Length: 102
Image (cartoon, rainbow, N blue to C red; front, side):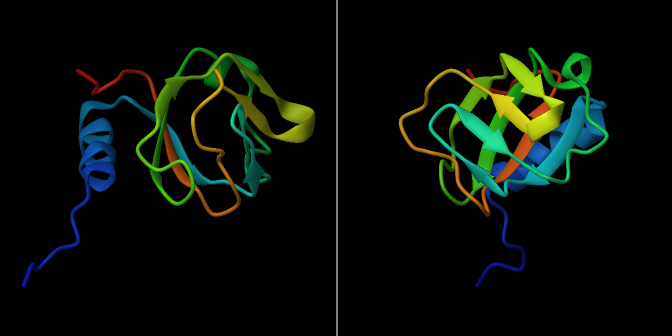
């Protein structure tokens, strides 16, 4: 029986925090195959989120990793290239300055 519930997403989150590459984490309040909506992004800016790596580590779209193409503050929406699975309310995600993909 494992002591910790370590998933790849939790490990990625720890690495980004340790490396200083973590931009922010969040839980989506909505989304689609090309957007993540998070009403908690009230202080975010396009400069801070555009061109960053986005990784969904829990919920709808889990394990999808992509790069943000825009952020719209008025609707709290991160735009990404179209993904195979839609992001949805409850999707937990990481925005980082770098990627751990091979």
